[in-house]
Length: 478
Image (cartoon, rainbow, N blue to C red; front, side, top):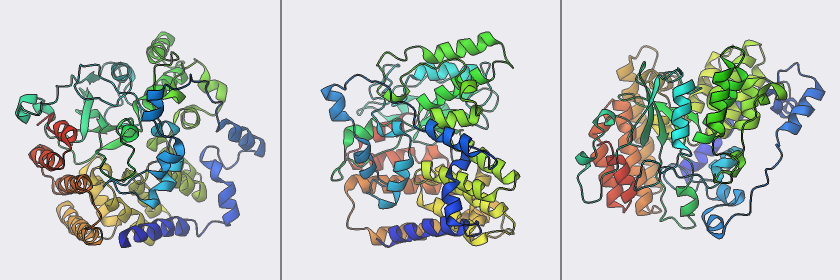
C-alpha cells in the first residue's frame, strides 16, 4: 500500500534527521537511558537504574480456562495490533512492543452502575473517589482536588428499540461521541473521560475477546472542545500515580490525607480479582523515596508511561542544553503512544521547531504524521490544531485560525481520497464503517461542528455495519 510505505519512510526520516547533529550513532544508543537520568549520572547509577526497569514478576494464580481463552499473549497482541480503521499495519508493531504490558492483558470491566454493556474502566468508583480527592495528574483543567472533580452519574445506554433521545445526558451531547464522562471539574468545566474505540471484528485473525476487553484510555476533554488530552493508558495506571503522588507529597500535606488516599487506592488490591495482574498489588508508603529518583521517574519506572511526564523530561533536558536526550525522550513518547494519539507527534514537531537552528523539514514531517491518526487526539483546544496546520506547512503564519484549519481540512480530504482509492477493495464492512465514522468526526473536529449534531450520523454508520454496541454507545448522550 502506497500510503503505508510513505508512513514508514516518513517516520524513519523524522527520527534519523532529528539525530543527524548528534555526536555519533553509538552515543545515541548508549544514551537511551538518559530519558530517566540526567546526562551527568554516573555509570553506576545507570546500571542500577537498568536493573530497576525489570521489576520482579508477581506470582499470579494460574488463569482459569475462560481467562486463557479471552486473553492474548504479548507476542500475539503485538502481531494483531491494528490501525485506526482495524487494518493490520506493520508500522504499528514497533509501537506495540513499547506499550505497557498491561495494555495487552485482559482488562477489567466495570459494571458498577448496572450497565447492560461493559465499561472497561477498572475500579470506576475508586477512580472517581481519588480524582475528587487529588485531581487528575497531567491534566490542564482537572488537576484540582478537594472535591473539585465531581463524579458523573452515567445514564443507561438506549435500548435497541428505543430512540436515542430517551437516554438523556443532554449536558454531554456535544462531547466527543467516543468519550464516556467520568468526573467533571466544577471550576473549569473540563471532564475526565474514558475513550472507547471500535474494532472491526469481521477481520481475519481478529481476536475479539482480547481487543474488546482492552482497558479504555483515560483522557481529558470538555463539551465544545474539538479534541482530547491523553492522561493515561488505563485507569489503574492513573490511580497508582495518584497514590504515589500523595505519598511523595506527604511532607507538604497532612500525613493523614496521604494515608487516606493510599488506603482508598489499596482497597481491593492483592486479592487476585483484577484481570490486570501486573498492577494487582498494594502500594506501600515510602516507595517513591526508597527508589531514590523522585516522583516522575518512579512513576515511569514503576507505574507506567504517561505522555506529560515524557514531555516534562524532554523539556528539562532541553533547558540543560542536552538536545540529544531531549529528542530521545520525545521519541520514546512517540513509541509509547504514537499510532493512536496524534498529540505526541504534535509535541515532537514543536520541539523540533524550538531548536536552534530550526529543523523545519523534520518539524513539518512530524506535524504531518498527525493527519494519519484520529484528529481529535491531536490536541485539546483549537489553537493546537492551528499550530499543527502551520508547522505542517499547510498554512502560513499570516493565515488566521479559520483559514489555517480550512487548508488543513483540504489536505486531510486529499489524503483520505488517496487512501480510499488505494484500499478500496480490501475493507470489510466494519472496517469501512469505522473509517467512515472517523471521517465524520475528523471533519467535525476541524470545522467546529458540534459533535452532538453528528451523533445520529455516526450511530447510523455503525448500525449499518452491524456494530450495535458502538451505535448505542454513541447514542448514550444523544
